[in-house]
Length: 173
Length: 255
Image (cartoon, rainbow over all chains, first blue to last red; front, side, top):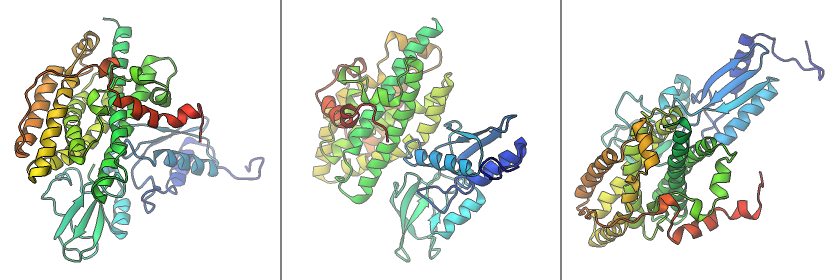
């Protein structure tokens, strides 16, 4: 049924409401890496609905000092409200986010825009000096780290010795 | 020992750690736009952001433990010097880049050993904050440690500067391992790590890097203290005056 304003909301039922919430959240982009949605990034930790269809959404920050966290919460709330969903968004810190939570789609999207996706944490941490990072532009493995701290808290800055281009690497975290 | 006393002691511990993170984070942020090179400017401010992030989590938790309705902002912006409980090391001025790096390394090595142990704390909130922070601090100690080796084992001038800073700052390291009676109870309850064991781990980590940096470990002589009790150097007042200006000029202002 359309509501008083003549708009259709999702059908009642916890499952449908939860799915609608995930769909809405998939449209929220990370403000600092706008090719990734917050779902791709793996920072939407849980979506649940109670008997009345009222949603609880838990987000987790990538880095504890990430200045984008407040903006992300606001944008998630806005997207859920636009989808006519009654949701409460909260921030949880445990368990801590890791780059392993970035989805495969997310990794592909990062590579497409020239950001080297993080290696799986089972491998050696990226900070190890002998880690081989291939250039996202020319594929050469002859690259060097310029700085462990890049344009955002989650990235490091590298450069290719073959094509000379600098590039971002998503840190293994 | 009652739970209420634990709660009060835990408030004190969490406040000290939160204040230390906040004050050091603010100090590092003063390098923004002034670091010797662009990458380092970005690095120092990245570390500053992480530290302020840790402070936010810790002060929020401290406010909950205290139970008087003070949130992170209230604790950060509405307390004066004598209510701050940070280590004196954190408030020491930046001086030159080498001095900043020595201060940061001495702190980072401590923070890493502390957070690694706090991950196993019997207090779930503290363990959660530590699990988040430890991943970032691992990065920090690598950064400040690498620089210390570079500067110590660098030119005569860089060596002299960091050696001088090490001598100046060493007397501020004793405070990191002080525990009062209330905190000893927290140690016994498995909430916070044992300071003696923490100090041994810190010293081993620091000595390894100092050796690589061709720097001599200063002797443990007379140690500065007081920060944990609210007795601070003159430097903290100036730092707070800048940090707290806006919320003091416009109390309760919101965006």
